[in-house]
Image (cartoon, rainbow, N blue to C red):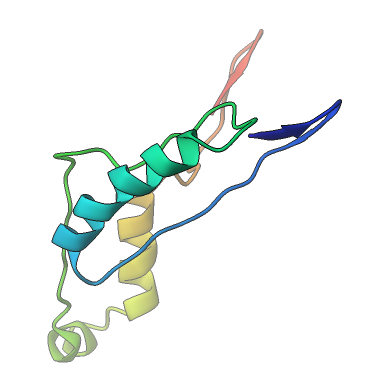
Length: 97
């Protein structure tokens, strides 16, 4: 978060690369540099070192033969692995998402 007097705002930045090794090498260095900027309150990343990654290749011909649409596969994967809200459970006192 950058702060200037009483006005404060969050600034978000994203780094990406097709070379994961290079990304893992440079992101920690960039974080350390940003931490040295005056008035920077907090710097963090959402990359979990050693986290899991799943690469999926869809056999489009087989999906078409079975009548499965690509957007349905995409939605099912998003429901299973992303942070998409899929339901709200209501009780007499609270609601849980």
